[in-house]
Amino acid sequence: MKQKATVQGKSMLFNSLFVLFNLAGLAMITIGSHASFEEYYLLFNFIGYITIAISSAALFIFSGRLMMANVSRLLVGGLFIVSGLVKANDPIGFSYKLEEYFEDGALAYRIKEWFGAPGFSLEFLIQYALLLSVLICIVEIVLGVLVILGGKVKLVSYLLVFMMIFFTFLTWHTASCDNTKKFVDRDTYQMSDPIAQMKIDQSKTDKAIKIISKSASVLVLEEMKQPQCVDDCGCFGDAMKGSVGRSLTPSESLWKDIVLLYLIIWIFIAQWIIEPNTRKQNTQFLIASLVVIALFSWVFGWYFPIIFAAIALIGSLWLLKFGGIIFGNYFGSSLFVALVSSLMISYVLLYEPMKDYRPYAQGTNLLEKMNDGIVGKYESVLVYKNKKTGEKKEFLSTSKEYLASKIWEKTEWKYLEMTQKEVVATRIPSITEQFNPFLALTDITEAEYNLPIVQELLKATKIQGLKILDLTYNSKMEVSFEEYSEANFNPLEYRILDTIEMNNPAMTDISIRDYIIKTDRILVLSAKNLMKGNWSKIERYKSIYAACKKKEIPFVLITNASRAEITSFRKKYKFNVPVFLNDETELKAIARSNPSLLVIKKGKVAGKYPHRSTPSFEWLNKNVLLTK
Image 1 (cartoon, rainbow, N blue to C red):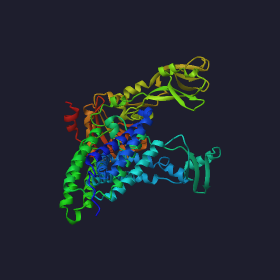
Image 2: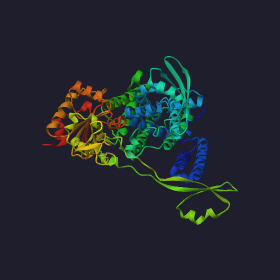
Image 3: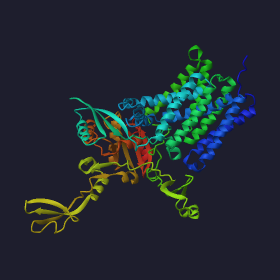
Image 4: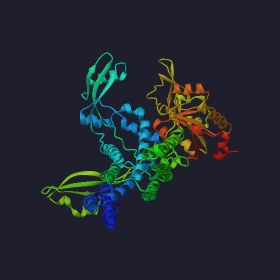
């Protein structure tokens, strides 16, 4: 009879050491592949691979597979739960990232390139991005719980491997995407579309465009295009950026997935000896997994995952014991975890993320977020090649080592090139110039004009000029002082009528960006899509606006809409509020709720309220605005 596998295997002490060495080797390889340790790449990788190879062989010899698999279950399960929760905290944000991948020049271009299928597209999935976002989050959390409990290990191990192969492919694609390359793309246009005729005209002179077929109604053509590279995989949503100051780089994301895949392979190869946890093991795994989850939660600065994991794990164990024939199994546990996850996701979809990692979160200083970027620093690197051996050497142009080597004097060395090395990585500010509520001068209505700041800004658009009569055509014109000269305007042909104040032709719009971050207090109603917004609370907004006007508190609506849509909105709801325009991408970052009300005091977000929980003005005045 075959002996049952145990955690200790042939030696608890040795196997524990082998597991530690194995993880240490994995860490060495990962660290050695990071750009910061480029000089030690060969050393770190050599030590790492040797350590992994020896410790892995020892784990098999000493029957330590189960111990390694159990450690992997804790790490993988904990990270899957936290990663799933971080994305479930903001499923709309995750859906935006999926939409990026579904764009025709993003992930689909790999298929077009590899399989010669220029007509392949994933754009049909864009409309399902939010649904897929929710499903991925739930599946990730459920798998995390099951792998910790040891439930349905064979099925779970296959699902984990499949999921991680897909995620690793995704992050590999992100890390290796080169937007300077070209690929063949096939598009279909209706002949009624103006772009169709434009493409036909371009094809006459542009060899990169080839017409495949053309009928009275449809045009099919192939065109060389550049890939749309996604610079952030969205693995942890905005959590990394909001907690540690930046997201994982594409390369770091890839290595994170490689590490996870490696750990999952240990679970996979041990699936035949892993059995459901005993009561004692459940207690051990529960405590250990909560410690792992607490560690990840600390990284993200959000401790709700500990509470959620405790509820999910304890609830699942309770169902296993008292769920009866129908729910007293791992299917019932999975349903329970999926239900709890769905309740959380439903809440954040109805309102806002429980933990707001975005730069417009309540309590954030917008001015600080506009200035938290880092200007990159670069140094010139000189590359020399040995004519005999082919060896290459690199020197920083300002280094003492380079000056001391006098390599330029040595005949056996040939200068190859000068490259740039990044010493300090560039980091763009959390809030960029995309946040810029503006309005064209020609679109200013009475609602905007009544704002004192708009009147001030309009004064800044005025310059001194002259009203001139063209004697030849008996017509009048306005000319700025800077443009006027007697050489250009001969006194025999032109007569100066008067000095005037005129519009500066170089200024076509006004921006209230600086005003928003500097004024004592302002209420900003944000609507990422004006026509699709939920305006069930419109009367509440109208009453807040009316009260703000009485107390001379500025109130503006920021959206991305056409002038016709704004006019229609005002007419439909009888809400003649000042409206300014902003880029839709930034509006999506400001708030997930459409619309959402922000109270900003001296550049700090003092309050942020999704439309379903919009407070009354009295409450705002008493608790946030604090006016008399």
